Image (cartoon, rainbow, N blue to C red; front, side, top):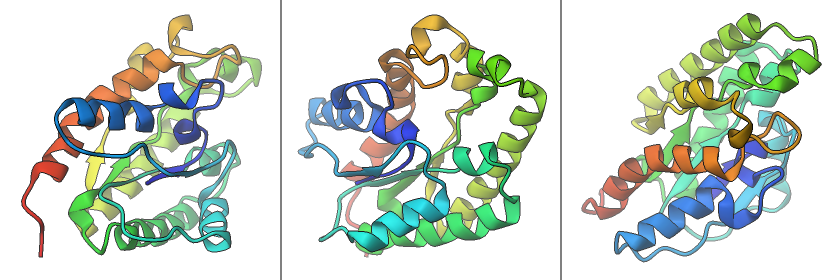
Length: 202
């Protein structure tokens, strides 16, 4: 199960080229039997909008692996950090429930830094401010993950290092291309594989 926003649904790329689908395929390549993910994500969603979508159509069953990547739209819209922290924690609790109350089967990805993209200049946004706010949001998410013993995968440095490259973006100059999603998947793969190969946690 993959929960999130445009970075999870993959705005501008086929589903097979998004990081959750790439991850599932890579895990199968490691000999781990895993279906393609169910995805609850839409471009533009904030934390509360993701929560509302889960409420509207609650997922059924227990999932072997649950991912959560959300918050960029809270930051983009200027929503308060304290609000994000509270709503993120609630979403994390729901992710753990979807994993059968096993926090060791949940992973969180950090928010990428869209401030390095051409879109930022087009919107006359200040890249340094975007970076600082994203760092604050990610620090809140990381701390929350620590409280719940949930894995936190920091993809933000990769987004900063390569995110301005044309090959790493789709035509809108903002959203990641399949090449960037592949980089993220490579970071997530060893974490997810360790989770799924570990002995069941009581």
